[in-house]
Amino acid sequence: MATGKGKKRVRNIPVLHNQPKRKHTIWLTDDAWYSVQELAVKQKVSASEYLEELIRKHCITVGFSLP
Image 1: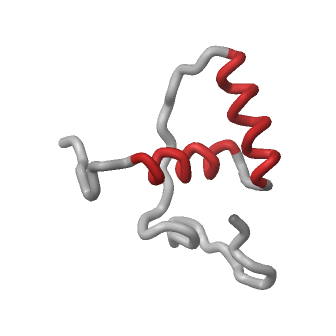
Image 2 (image 1 turned 135 degrees about the horizontal axis):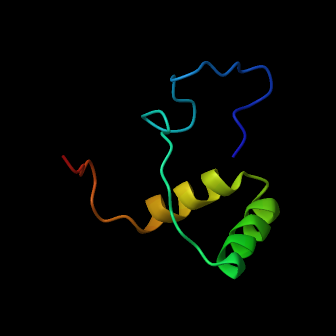
Image 3 (image 1 turned 180 degrees about the vertical axis):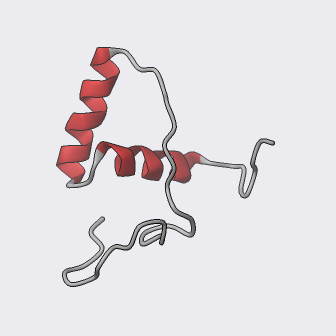
């Protein structure tokens, strides 16, 4: 999912989604991580963006946030 040629990214200003991304930590086996990377390359996106789209596609909770 490219932002388009010539569209400048600015820190903390969302380009693809309605909010900026933040750093989170997840634990995966090496096999799972390599699979995510491989699938992301096939989709021509980063591993982060691949996981974002995968989760958004299957998310049933909208706007939910933990305190």
